[in-house]
Amino acid sequence: MPQNDNQRLLEVKGLSKYFGGLAAVDKLDLEVRESEIVGLIGPNGAGKTTVFNLVSGVLKPSEGRVVFDGEDVTSLKPNEIAKRGLVRTFQASLLFKDFTVIQNVAMGRHLHAGIGFFQDLFNTSPTRQRRIQIQERAMEIVHFMGLDHYRDELAKNLPHGCQRALGIGVALAAEPKFLMLDEPTSGMNVEEKEAIMSSVGRIRERGITILVVEHDMKVMMGLCERIAVLNFGIKIAEGSPDEIRANRDVIQAYLGAEGK
Amino acid sequence: MKNNQSGWEKVILPVLVGLGFLLPLFVKDPYYFHILISIFIWSILTLGIRLILVVGHLNAAQATFMGMGAYTSGILAKNLGWSFWLGLPIAGVVAAILALAVGYPTLKIKGVYFVMVTFGLTEVFRHIWMMWTDLFGGPQGLLGIPRPNPIKLGVLTIAFTTKVPFYYLALILLLITVVVMQRLDRSRVGMTLRSIPQADLLAECIGVNVMGYKVLAFVIGAFFAGLAGSFWGHYFTYASPWDFTWSNSLYMLIYAVMGGPGSVWGPIVGCFVMLVVDELLRPIHQYMPIVLGSILILVLLFIPGGFITIPERVRGLVKR
Image 1: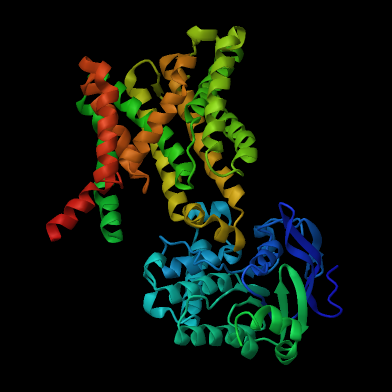
Image 2: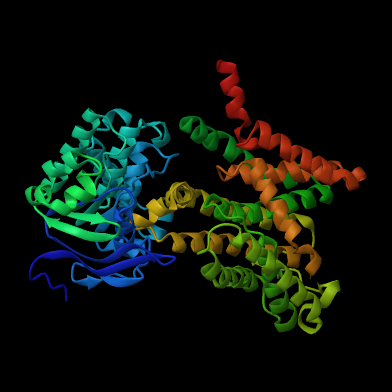
């Protein structure tokens, strides 16, 4: 069934979302191949986050299809899409704020807990074994995201940068095939940005395909193999970082307005 | 804190449970057993309502699930001659099925809809029980529900003719409820339930079937309300629509909040304190709502974690 002839992991076809007649996303086509890292950029209000919400099932598209790993997932609920290996992070520091860092990451293991309801309830010996494994795995991820120091701190007490890192950690704990990062460096200082980007690089080395939305052009140019540019819900360009940098439409829509 | 908690659970709790079982050796007055039976049954109901409260939903129909249980096993016993011991689990299952039917379409919607729907459910069933006189006995209730059948243990026969056997039965039902709820709390299911009100969208996006968990919490709570209702009916030998009103569900919510919904002990402490206060104030019963309301406001203002957090707070003050 899954036809990965071109190793296409994500295929978005003619995706549109209207909010009261206004097109937030307009007939978007986008492909991401396996183990690629693709960037989605565009000025504020270009519809980047809407694309994320549509692909992850948080919003239902008005038109178009989302095909993930050869399967049409357009009408699936977010948890069903996550089950297939597509996991996203959130732009806001959306976390389980009253849980500790390690508990947050352990929650991310939900799909891989491997504990049945009654096993869980009766706390059987294999269940305890599984719990230990979950804890160990969560610990690895906490370490991977550089949060060892905050392991037992409540998520709400973390500095902003660490909250963002934890958000990625939670998603990573779900063992995605495909990870979508929504502005992972927003609101961060230069060092924090560098730390996050190096984490993203290492996530990629693990063979996880990544789609990243980002505001910071510089970050994107260094990171992505391919970039798609969105403006007013329409894809105005797609190509390598160099091609994007040279594209006149992009300069006008994006760099012209902000960068220089 | 965690160590302290498990410390008291290891020492004080077995003592309390032991005292509970030995109490009939020292206390003979049936009045006290009646009060304790009420507290135990209300604790079961309140523990049930707490489970969906933890997920962030107000269930205004817990008394209706109780009524479902009371009428179900009452009618099975009275009209069909079924044993209470069979009717009891069936009552729980019927209440759970009703919760499944109601919860599935309504828990999807956020906000006030769920509390409104459960409120509506209460009114619908109250009227069904009132109007359908042939089956449910109408406004005067279903009378003549038989007492539970005697249990024969070899030479010993436990007959449900005095308060004491009912007391033991209520105590055992409460212990079962507590064990299940405590296990749930400490399991991954419990952790997942607690995660939902913090960030349901995040939970959903890491693969949690949020809807499914909400329905599960609602259904388990209703199951125990069904058990409690069945007991209630066979204890009083009648079931009346006036006992299963939304205001009783509201009291359960209030007791859960007062006691502290953070742990399984909170609702029990809440029921214990409030029902004892209720009993003490019986001579001036018309003022009870004022007292209850005042206590609720004070708890919310000064001990938002509920009665159960008082020792912790005192310890904190002493340390300072």
